[in-house]
Length: 225
Length: 54
Image (cartoon, rainbow over all chains, first blue to last red; front, side):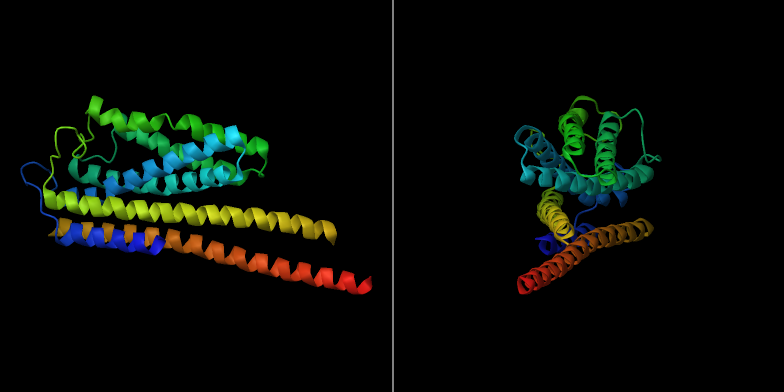
């Protein structure tokens, strides 16, 4: 899955570079930089999937005490951090080319998504710096649960307040505003990123299971020796 | 054309970054598998020597 997703992402970028139509020179300051959108939008989409997994995993741990759900929390936070950074970084590159500034502190979409990524950084680094235990898990699961409120806020931000970040171009309710070739490349990108991030989360969940098994065996071995 | 060159470099950099991320995850998984096998082998040896003592 990881390999298929990765190949899909490579294909998307190749199509974006060589095949996708150019945008109007009059409508954009930097028409070439607009093609970063084929990376930025699917990465942000994958980040929402990862943050969704983080939310479900956190709730599952807090309310069901399920080990599988804890592994989902770990996988969701790591995938959310990686895809969040991808979306933020690509957005800054585009912003620098198009707006002349990589960031706007007054834009709700930019700042709520930035906060989401910061939350993922805090959860991943914080969890790795603490010994595993019920209290540690409860603390970080609570952050994963309540932090999710930023996801719907980020989603609706450009629908309510269009400050600097462009408004939605697909799933707008009144038909898509982008060219069908552009839409096709974007769709391939979204599917590839989805496959890739699900593959990563599955690998990450397996890793956490292996780490837990290793820890149990080491305890048993040390106790028996 | 200059803009497209920058874009190609940015795309390539991003692809390398996610390839590296994937590679580290796969390597971590392989290392853990090896450590588990080693502990299992050591555990089996200890069990066998305990049995022979008994």
